Image 1 (cartoon, rainbow, N blue to C red):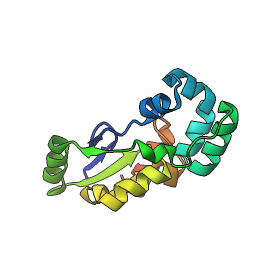
Image 2 (image 1 turned 30 degrees about the vertical axis):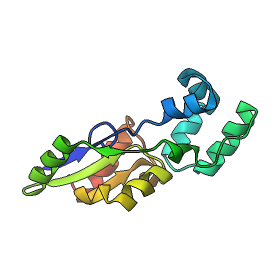
Image 3 (image 1 turned 120 degrees about the horizontal axis):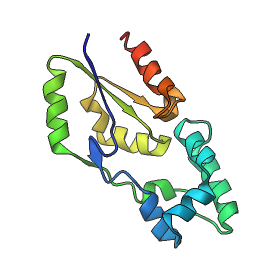
Image 4 (image 1 turned 120 degrees about the vertical axis):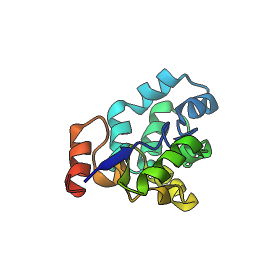
Length: 148
């Protein structure tokens, strides 16, 4: 069986990176955002070990001021990359095509509500499967689930 795995952010949809906008909104640099957020917390958010609410609570405390609870969604305005969408539509005529994406619950729900994931035979979202790229367990999980 041939299986094609597509990332979503930056491959199927653009305008998915919200850190620059969040940083600007908060009046801090991207580097400061990442430092305050801590990579372990960002990874925990992407792998579903903490919720957006838990992340925002911890981030607000470290920042020293309240952060809106919907901060991750305020600037999330994904737009389909039409050329990639057409490629996926053609591939799906003959092959199985899935999404393998690092995401968080709220972004996943936005994509889902817009029908963005209907393009795929199945979606493997990091916050649901508990692994995030580039961890090889992310890809192993997909290949195992797809019997490849």
